[in-house]
Length: 162
Image (cartoon, rainbow, N blue to C red):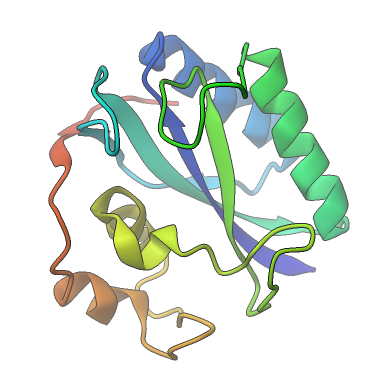
């Protein structure tokens, strides 16, 4: 089994899409734990604010099966993939960590670079796994968050019960 972490985001009908995704993810992985939900500015494009959070779960299935499940869930929520990397999303599910695996691009790059780039990824990850260590630099996520100097995009926490 692998401890997995994923980021969850939406800026289209975000309340409904985030709540729905949380419920469906918990059905798939009953041990799923969610961070606080944060309202964040759109990064890389002009658009509506996002809701973002991080989730953690133990996966028994293969990495490919987990990635397929996440893509199917995005598709079921009306995800359009033609908009480019930085665009509005009904639902965005990105695997951040797969245990301590380091994978370079096939079928995914892990750990995700966004962990160290964006506050809306690092802050909730540090909340869920403060003592866990980044597989490449060995620093714990609590310390990485404490030293974060990137562009702030988090506006506020959102009391969104799952």
